[in-house]
Image (cartoon, rainbow, N blue to C red; front, side):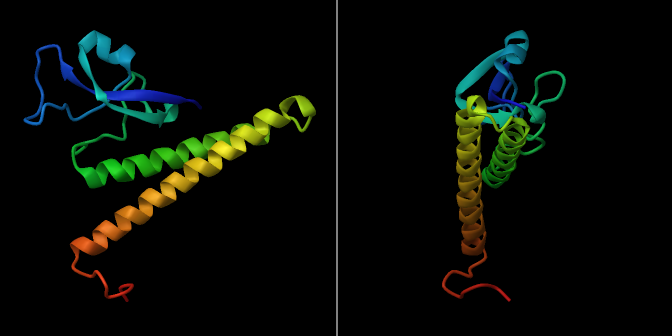
Length: 139
């Protein structure tokens, strides 16, 4: 498993939604054949989240919804952390792999920290939207 960049894009016929974005995301290699990438829409995902055509399957029906984007990012962060954990476990305990193993473990912890921070923000936003701010945890 590896990190890959995916982008929203405008189709070859210049079709896009009202906000200028397409609903899906894909790798640059995939986009080259069908349109133009929107470079500022770049996100990092795990290659396991791509279909065989290079499309990011996490951006289904409503990718322009900020809440859906956030939960897709949380899922991706967790997948990327798990991939690093798996790679670190498969490394030998010898001195040659020790530095690489340590870096993988650091990256995994950082990715999980980012996912937790984003999840907490999403949970707080959901609570704010429900009018429960300042009321403590719902029962």
